[in-house]
Length: 242
Length: 206
Image 1 (cartoon, rainbow over the protein chains, first blue to last red):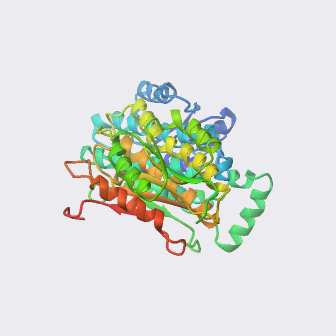
Image 2: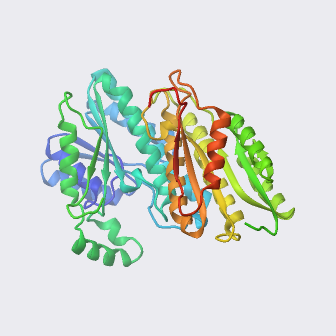
Image 3: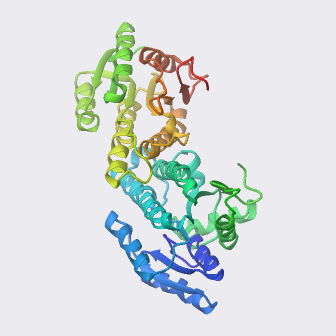
């Protein structure tokens, strides 16, 4: 489970769901304290989890995660890539190249490297699931989010390429488009307190995606029998225009 | 459109699209535009825009077509493959796009400005052996969309040309025909703009 921040976010919810099903979950994120909260929650509910602090800043960082997994002796059943660069609105002409690049490195390249490493580790077993968290921005480039949308689109394209390549080897790669606002800390904290107000308005108008329900869908993808796999799944609240 | 400065076209194209750029350069010259054909991408672009500004020319058409199609599988592609492909196909398009927008901003909306990105079908289709190129192409396409949505209302026509071919033995569309299509995009009236144009050789099944 790569990219876990708040317990209330998608990462925390997915980790909890997979742990509930009996898998030992490795939770990868930047902040020890937040990871510890998720691990503690999982253990309180009878599950097993390990915190892995990693900034995904380089190929070596990504490799370190998989080296740790290898040493653990567990069979790798599923990997979820949920990490992304800070998503904040910026006018295109006010978007520095360093922001474009930073976005691509974490939102896209790190996800590519994680997917490759996961697939390689799963190949000898001929089974396993790799799930990428996508967004509305993965599907089209809108104003003010050009750098993020570009990185998400690139990641989605890679997920598709990987899916095509490893399906015959028994590995299920899927991309889940989270099309709407998600209930949770990050959106609330965004834009100063404005995020909280936006969240309030959105919830009244369209509703927001519930992270526990998102997690349930990720689990269902992992459970899909090989006779009928989804490689892309869109999730949106019932009132969300699309 | 009356321009106080001489209108010009800037074509930033690498090896992959050089034939299209050369054909388009001829069309631009026939229409009275000064043409600058640049093959070094980001290494050259800022200096080129500066030189043009100082010489009193006004860019009205900028085309970017970067990168080389790398045939390598999703698992065999290295981090360096993904990065170098992203830099030449997508990042270069992003930065040159910003430079072009800044160069054309002042003359809009009275003057007509067009920014064209030459892209590849791997942006939207999953083609085996195109992992790095497909990811970079998808990233570029998304950027073109954001730029189009953000700047279109201000009068800048941003378009993405999606070319099929060069993979699995498929033919590319003819270079001079692609150039003609790009010229047609530049000619489109603002009441009828195309933001994505799909091109493939006519005799090949869709």
